[in-house]
Amino acid sequence: MAKIDLMGLMTAIRSYEQRLTLVLLDPALTVSQLRMLMTINGHTDVTSSYLSEQLKITKASVTGQLKELERAKVVRFTPNPDDKRSSFVHLTAVGKKRLDLALVGLKELEKKISKELPEHTINALNRMVMGEYKKN
Image 1 (cartoon, rainbow, N blue to C red):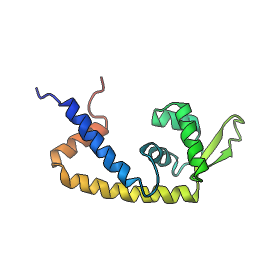
Image 2 (cartoon, rainbow, N blue to C red):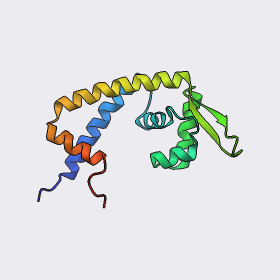
Image 3 (tube, rainbow, N blue to C red):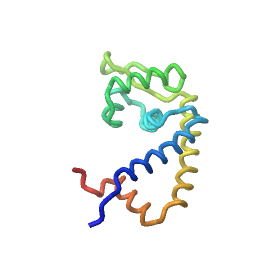
Image 4 (cartoon, rainbow, N blue to C red):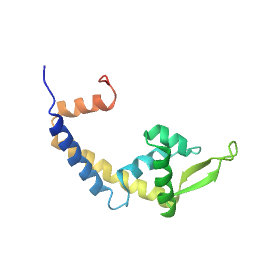
């Protein structure tokens, strides 16, 4: 049975994360912020609790990131008519523009990486992403 080089895998993941970070310099986003904007995009009733659940991060982390994104005029809040304690978060025009720019860069990076890796590696990674491997 083949064994995975876990340290090598972690190094490779870090290398790809650094490449993604470079792509996000122009739209001025972090990887975490990109994930958040992608989750918000296209929805009208996103709350911080929903973001916490979907992104699997603490509510405190969500709140901190949302405050930073609000200061940058990337997101805005509207009251939740069904729950006075919460509000809905929406992308602003600035936020949509920054997300669109990030997605263009992300697509270009995907193409580059896809050319660098053998097809069987890409297929294995895609199966992993789709949850075909059991989680222990």
